[in-house]
Length: 256
Ligand SMILES: [Zn+2]
Image (cartoon, rainbow, N blue to C red; front, side):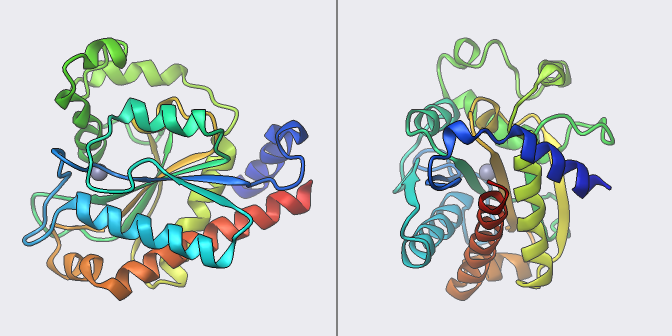
């Protein structure tokens, strides 16, 4: 039922105006964190390094297998880029998809598995998830964050009410792609999928294109940390994201 709704709405929300030839011509790949912002930690690795490696592998896979699509990186190396500037760059580049790559953490060190997030309010979960607060708290490193993010306080549940009014023409396309990514992780890459989730992520807030935030796994889980730092593991995860985008692109183009 849900997939047929997503299918119908994504048909409606896709305007032929922005697709003269290809539905997907430019993809923005966003490696989470960087520079002075390490992201979360495992026992021997940092989120900023794993996210950059997987993002770079993903870019290479696209270059080899889908040369007609241009890839733009928000963070090609180990530099700090604000969440606002990531979205600004994506919009200035007129991207057709925005894919943000991250790793998760959890204090009890037991949780493992992948999650793909889409901007929005998940009506089934009233709690503010730790991962959402953590990823948004990067803005506290910016001096003028209250101005840039319109008074948003990442640690205050009240701030997230702002997102109740969030409407975006691309939300159904984003959910469609997120579902395909989690399906790849679960069924082809043989990871545990924790599913598609929705919350108010600042990096996804202002991108004007279908956008997802991928949590590749938990660096705090020792098995998963090893997998996430293994070059082959990184290749498998990047390949899963690539295949999900390829399927998404094919379906969009068939509908045109
Ligand atoms: Zn992150």
